[in-house]
Length: 196
Image (cartoon, rainbow, N blue to C red; front, side, top):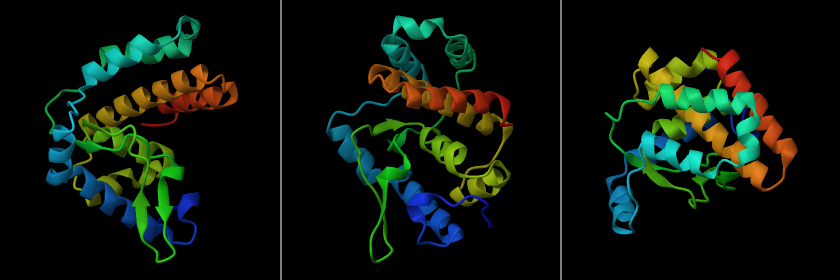
């Protein structure tokens, strides 16, 4: 698989090798029965799409409700909830580039598990695809991961990246980092206008 976009945190790696490493780690995390048992023993509950949306709505500042893009995104989230017919797995939920570390030996690590949850793995997959993988490579990427790239699944990915974008907008708004918040608003707009 050729990649037009190289993630900067893996600049020492060939893009194809970098993406293969990413796929391996995500498959390992999402498929880990041991990690799931540990998380359940530590009191982690399964986070459904409904509960995620409810939690999001509870933290949105009044000021943000005045933004039509945010209201449109929330309406989309409410009206297009994905089915809960998936197995909830360990999910990192913060796959930002700074949370991937490449050792001097070429081993890739996923760090900062502070926001991990038991959830639909589409929450992690959507972030990686929308933020780092050219859309033209999504079907092949999903097939290698082991997920059939159906329209229904692509809609699930869109729902979860919309949710995550909204969480980032709220977070940066709370931190008064308006430049970052606006970057996420622009990205959210691209989710609806530039992606299939």
